[in-house]
Image (cartoon, rainbow, N blue to C red):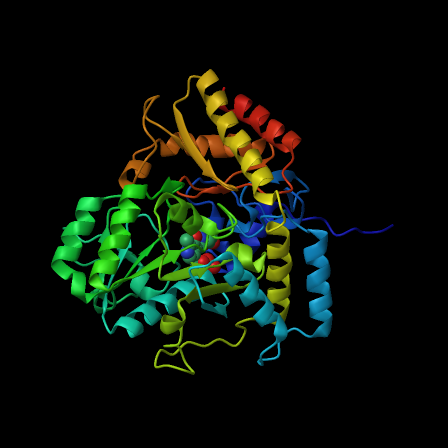
Length: 438
Ligand code: KE4
């Protein structure tokens, strides 16, 4: 008689994981601590679905936090990865495919002349920061409350007490002097920008921003705010760094910067940071800008930056195959239509149920908030997001998870739709939401 291995439950796996991995996870948000409950251990995924250790199938609105824009297991991507792997995993030497991927990305992001490939969004943002400081010879930097740029020390900062005071570390292990030059401003606040540049303008190396913020759920930088930010950076010789790790090739084929270039004539960031989609689910990220800035990097210039697996041959194959699908005619129209159907549907179902909800979406990215009162406007900054109803969000998260819909396990995260999500998947999601909200 075959003694088929007894499958472990999610709880058993979580128990075992916590013995050998801090919190049982390799990235904190996966531990479900914001929403409570037991994380689902995923065994495999296909298209719009992920399947957990207990065989439960979920419609997946995380997509690995953005990379899986085609859905899981796209045949062209899988084929490209298998072929690349058969040719070799890593050489520590240049390859033609790194050139092809760079050319592909640069053809879609006209603000960049050159880019460098790295292995994570954190590494890309950290390197972009060092480059901005090296290229300007200045130390001060500005970021915004509610924006996340990975976990490099100088970026793990929360707002100081006043506008002009410097940030405080958000993590233990970050010495105060490391964040002494980091200013944290309220998102979408023009007055705060004016004051900060009046006080510190000539000393600011860069302003780093998520143009459509996906780390405080879903908040857009208002066009007037972005226009003024660009003007002030130009006026003071400060580099504007767009962190498009999440929004890049996700909100539009030309990323968020193409949306602002439509609204603001001649708009462009000076440095851009990408990740997630350009790796297609494998460890790959990038940062780039005009040639004059990028040539400050080693081995040409004085700003050091390096990486054993940078431009990894298998990861570049995965990213290249992904981008070649994303840029096909009609891809984004179809994705945006699907995402809007989901977002509008959720708002309609909440309205039917008399539950106050606000929501927004762009391309394949969406967010929704349980407002305190119906008619409340979309949150424009971190404080407003955190004032929405977290308890209701968490109850809704579990009610949806129990019904086979996997939303982000935290109210400060955005949601992602893939090309594999069908109209039936959206309908099933809205049916689950109708029941969950009841
Ligand atoms: P990674 O180092 O996690 O690849 O990228 C950091 C990063 C940088 N910039 C932005 C705008 C990002 O959203 C991220 C990472 N996003 C989170 C989701 N909120 C990744 C999920 C996680 O931390 O596990």
